[in-house]
Amino acid sequence: MPPDSPSPADIEALIQRCLRGDQLAWDAIVKQYWRKVFNVAYKFVGKHDEAEDLAQDIFLKIFKSLDTFDRRANFQTWLISISRNLCIDHYRSVRKERETIDRDVDASELAPASRDPGPVQVLEQRDRVELLRQAMSALPDTLRTAVLMRDIQELSYQEIADKLRLPEGTVKSRINRGRNELARQIRKLRGEEYSPTGTMPHRTGAY
Image (cartoon, rainbow, N blue to C red; front, side):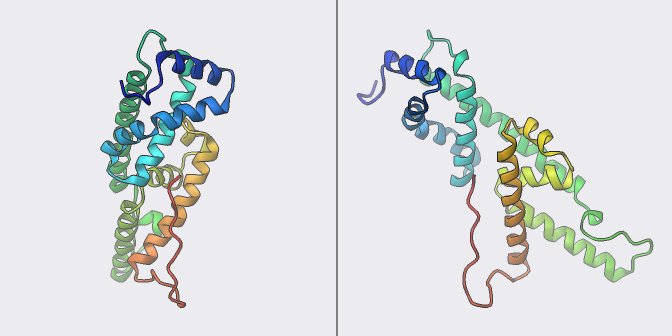
């Protein structure tokens, strides 16, 4: 065991403090194991920002599950096992979300319905659909999932929070940032990335 690794007794003390609501104890656990959890997440998503997002979600779920930890087990082994399982769940949910994009996104989402659209209107609608698909694919998985569930599948904030097992406030934040990033990607695809003053647009960070 590396010299800087906490002993089982140290971990037990931190867990007990966490269960009593000691934020400093939880901060100590996160600091100790952040890199290990982040590395597990990064192997699944391959992007730094998305791995940070996923690692934050993992630690939130670990915190909620602390009272279920069997003290006879190794804490790090337990933590990594939870991390991998949650990453697998995330991968499956993202895969399902990607499969719904082609099925759920169509011209009716992007343009007013017309009883008898002309050929130019049909082409314009197809272009808009393709533009949206490209812009959606450029979003981080966490933001794209939130926007898709809210704006395409029309789920409520609470329904999305329940499905993603996240606080409703986090869901609203991701949807807002996802919409802003989607608009930015559309402008980029249309060649409107730079403002008239030549300043770079603000990049939306991951949650």
